[in-house]
Amino acid sequence: MSRPSTTGLITRPGAAAGVTVTTGGSSFTFGAWVELAASLAGDSALAGAYGLTSGSGLYELQFGIGAAAAEVAISSLIVDQANPANTGLNVILLPVPVDGLASGSRLAVRARRNGGASTVTVAALLYQGITSDHVTTAAQPHTYLPYGTAGVALTPVASSWGNSAWVELTAGDAAELAIAGITLTAGTVNVQWEVDLGTGAASAETVITTLRSDTAFQLGFTNRYLPAALPVAAGTRIAARFRKSDASATGTWLVSLLYLHDTALLTPVAVATAATYVWGPI
Amino acid sequence: MAMQWTTNAQKVAPAGATAVSVTPNNTAMANSAWFEVLASAPAALVLTGLCIPVAPVSAFVYVDVGIGAASAETVITTFMGHYTNPGSSKGASYIPHVLPLDAIPNGSRVAIRMRKHVTGVTPWQYAITYLEKPIVGNLQTTTQPQLVQWTSAAITAPASAWTNSAWSVLLASAAADLVVTHVAANTFTSGAQWEMDLGVGPAASETVIATLRGQRGGGFDGPNVIPLWNPLDAIPSGSRVVARLRASATGTCFVGVQYHQKPL
Image (cartoon, rainbow over all chains, first blue to last red; front, top):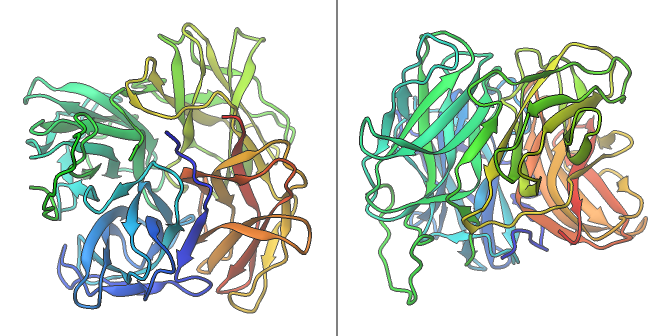
């Protein structure tokens, strides 16, 4: 097993401004595909993106391969941007690159968000000939839950570091999934938070992992990734709860689960079988 | 395919509580005292990251994590970042230890100290994330500390759009084969898109080994660190390691790296 790669990142477009991608006119409606690379110069892996949004909110950048008007989605990158006028680097790398993009492929991106039409300036970050085996493919893509929405509401409690109630992220996927992390939309600023992810029936959840960060001013992208993918068996209910440093019970807090779909980490199959992937949660 | 995965639960310290307050040394680049994060590790631990929820001033900051009894701490790894006009207006700060650090024996006391390039004693705050051993799954860890380096001077992207700057030295000679886990770029011109090349080789013969890009939106930022989830294993021992910039508009910034020496 080896996480490092002897090949480094490249950008597309390169040595030029990023492409402008326009979201659809209504909430969570995709805009048109925009070309990032007409023809990849070698076998490639999608590693992530630079993207500066013109507005605030939760944005989905969906990457695809294929000729114009025939693009096939390979993964989605979800970002929450509260204040695009005051941001840091605006770069986010997928915790697991999406390998298998054949040389000569056309790479494109489209976007949607929880709001009306908006624009995002985007460039892809890629590996050509990645040597790491810490990769996924379009058959086990990056996606999120609840799909095509701004997240599940967490209701804060009026005590410092008091746990919220659990909220369901999924009743159970048809296949194993591997949790990559979360995106948290903050309801208040200057707050330190912890989010527990748990499995089990309602009122009987067991914590399976915890993520921690803060919401100083929610600048830039706020995805928080685990140190490695956390596989969860098919049919397993996943829920989230949170606690934070202040005692405010106000504000809208939203959480989305970032994951890899249809993995086989817990029960690897000895013989590969053909599978039809349906985009989005089943 | 050997995707990295584990079913171990990530945990935090302090847990369910405000992060540990660390009072900096008032002298630039002088270490603070050590501040305890965990009195006694409940098992052998693998460090997975550092939370920086409070960063009160603009600064290059360096954070050591150590183990050992009070007054006898030993540094096991170091993180770095840069903040501009932070106060209550910084980014949400979490810096992962991309290759989780397997260097905290069961029962260890874990502590943190910091230094920064400016004076001032307003406290910063820190918390850590970790996994308890044994690890179940397929997870590459390291026992090597994370090391950090910024360019000694800011790099200026030329006024001509997307024209390369001169190369700036990060390391004159790598002390071992190196694996880069994070790339950092501090405050660049607001609104300008930039690309950064990392390279190796003697002067006038540099070879690009990686390219990243980004854009700073406005007046607040931090920690300005990009984790490479697939660290870059392309720097042979003895290499001169360099960086350069090009951008849509002129501007200057420092470039930094966090890295490990091999063998991992």
